[in-house]
Amino acid sequence: MCDPTMMFAASTAASLASAAMGGESDFADYKKKVQAINQEADAINKSTTFKYRLSGLQQQQIQDKAAAETGALKTKLAEATGTAEAAAATGGVEGNSVQALLNGFAASTGKDLMYVGQEEDNQLTQVQLEKKGTKMDADNRKMALRNQLPDDPTSKVIGRFIGAALNVGESYMKNTTKTSDGSGLFGRRFG
Image 1 (cartoon, rainbow, N blue to C red):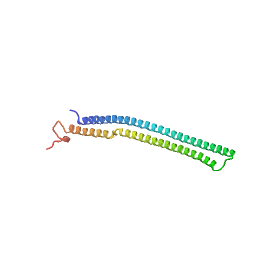
Image 2 (image 1 turned 90 degrees about the horizontal axis):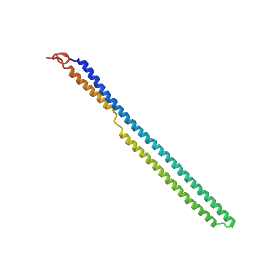
Image 3 (image 1 turned 30 degrees about the vertical axis):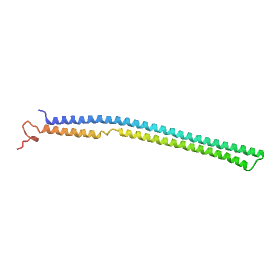
Image 4 (image 1 turned 30 degrees about the horizontal axis):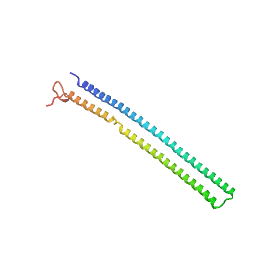
C-alpha cells in the first residue's frame, strides 16, 4: 500500500506545479498583448505629434503669407500715394480733389487689408479645428485600445492555486481517512 503522506506530497506538488504552469502561460500571453497594445498606442502618439507639427508649419505659412500680402498692400499704398502727391504738386493741383484721391487709395487698401486679415483668421481657425479633430481621433483610438486590454491574469492564477489547494485537501482527506484496519481518522476506532 502507498504511504498517504507520500501520496499527499506528490499530489500537492503536482497540483501546485500545474497551477504555476498555467499562471506562467497566462502572464506570458498577457504581457504579449499589453506590449502590442502599447506599441500601437506609441504609434498613435507619434502620428499625432507629426500631424501637430504639420499643423504648426501650416499656421506659420498662413501667417507668413498674410504678413507678406499686408506688407505688399501697404507698400503699394505708399507708392500710389507718393505718385499721386507728386503728380498733383507737379500739375499745381491741390485741395479736396487730391485729398479725395488719396482717401480713395487708403480706403481701397484698407478693404484689401481687411480681406487679408479675414482670410488669415479663417485659415488659422480651420487649422485649429483640424488639430482638435486630430486629438479627438487619437483619443478615440487610444480608448479603443484600452478597451482591448486583456484582464490581468492574477485573479485567474490565484483561483488556480486555491483550486489546487482544495484538490490537495480533498485528496488528503480521501487518503488519510481510509485505513486497512478499519480505524477512523487519526488511526483510532470510535465506538
